[in-house]
Image 1 (spheres, rainbow, N blue to C red):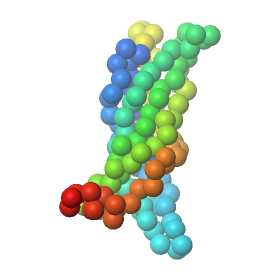
Image 2: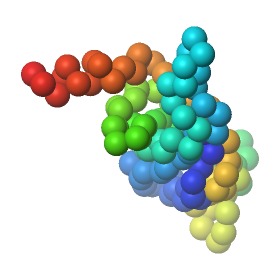
Image 3: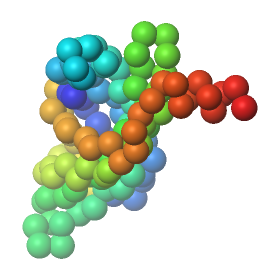
Length: 121
């Protein structure tokens, strides 16, 4: 996926959200499960400055959901640590550029039928 907008994060502030678009469709047994262009929502979990290089840092991201048509499916992913240089006068500000490609790994299966079952309980 690619970031839809830049992500700005401060080392003292976490829990900001971000959006990304699926770049390549997800295909299983010849069926498109997730179309190209599907919108994904995520969360900035933390931002950390490097102890070795003060001008560098890491942004910890996870995905929360994906929008497929009219349906929003919750996602559970492993954290992604995106390295980035600090920008601007404030050494605590990190920016991930719009269009940056990110790859996440699911930690739990995502299933629309499981979600529907949870909603009807």
